[in-house]
Image 1 (cartoon, one colour):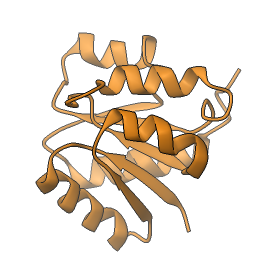
Image 2: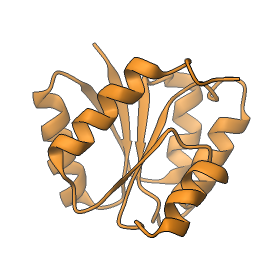
Image 3: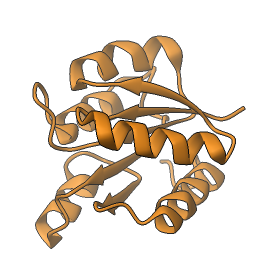
Image 4: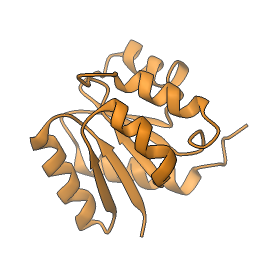
Length: 128
């Protein structure tokens, strides 16, 4: 079963997205802070991290950049899921945080699921 670590500090969003992903057959691990994500990702090695940018402790861009800089977590695909949808925010997700995809909120279920499937199918192909 594919394991997704979902990182968001909003309980309502967490509940909604978790239900959508579980319905699609994913195992979802809920994480509520950037620091917890960094600490758990190396140990638990999820198949994908779905990461909010606006977090109370460490923003998602810093979490992603940190994970992508560590050998044990650099190959875990990261999909940003955020209200930050400006061109600058999308560019920062890719150029600064090295994310694999960027999805805007409010959530479009089809877009989110298609993006997750695409990233999982293509992980490792663009590496290097």
